Image (cartoon, rainbow, N blue to C red; front, top):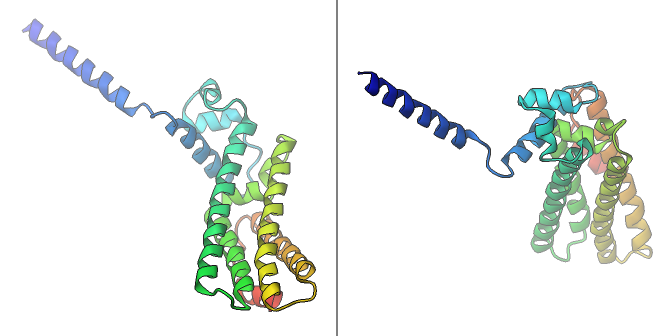
Length: 222
């Protein structure tokens, strides 16, 4: 009877060990989990600076475990910024390609592209409030300076994309100064986007960036 119990206990221990192995994150899964948790912690309005200790506690791991996947907290934020960049610019390319295919040669294709890019940015921020804090720099205060520089470059690229959309439209309309006209309008739209995202963050996510958006775009692009 004792031997039977020992065999049963051994079998249970083996099953438990196998279950533990199965639950261990696959390569890359823990890295994604860390970034998802960091983003969710940033969604708390007015949240203080997030420490690696707090992040590790939320994940129920040691700080050393975090550093096995990221060399520094700055690298974690860079992971979030990479997600923002890849998502936004992929969507911008989709918008431009779709509108060009659907309305090739139309004089309003550029403003329509630009409007859809702005709408997409607002929707992205609303769905990802933690990312919105990164985008406007609120979450990057006291962090490595290169992170804010990278977000500045992000908005420069957004403005360049808007400028390209509007310059194509100006060419269709035979404007005497298509580049200057597109540059000015793109700069205004980019500033509008940043302003809306800042207001969203400052309000504790209570004032959505899409508030009265269609009317605002009609004024800016009309």
